[in-house]
Length: 337
Image (cartoon, rainbow, N blue to C red; front, side, top):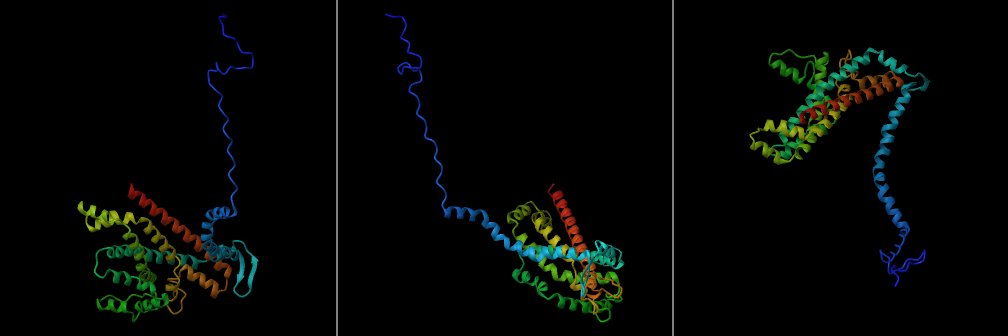
């Protein structure tokens, strides 16, 4: 008997002596998925593109009504452009230089900022206070919430004419009331600061209730359990309003501040109808930038300079809005910290 087992020839492996058993079978290759039908492809396209189609009408309308006039105004501002003669020669930045060199522009800009500060700051503070009162358990809350919107419904021209008579220099109701308590009548249509206060009062009367309702809607979304927890800790109503309500509605407050800034820097109707002439006073005491723009375009018929003023006002409003946004965000971040 041979002491060694027989050796298989080269290239052959005995199945009985294989240490790994039988060879594994190959797995089947994955098959390509069946092609999508037309209906499935349309369904995918609908899911992908339908949201853009739904929002496209707004952007198309904004492009036609907003962006095109803005771009066309920039084009007019670099040309000589008369109200009757139409387009003239290309003048570059000469219209802007003429505007910057006009002292009436700087006076109108000063008046605009003054009226804006006298209207927007009290307006936001009063709106916060009114919204806070309407958010409490008042009797006839629905009546009071509806009544604060009445000034906004009144036509601006009617409100301005009424307030113009209230602030009359000789027979105005306010000067009559001041005379009863021994105060000399105020020249609302002559002096600069009183005229700004009168116009700002009209703006505040119209817009305070509207902003109060916006802030009230935000206040009603604040969870009530926060107030209950604060009351259990001994916090009063004022402390709750300052420490809970205002921080919780901070985005809405920023929105109201920015919209008030935009509206305050575009004051036209109140200043236009404050007197019979409509030019901003005998010495342009309350002539705003929009009134100055109107005078250039429709009285002097210089649409090139008027367009330059419009673009400068647009940039000025954007700058003010960005500053307000940065300040509000900085104050909010400091409060959270």
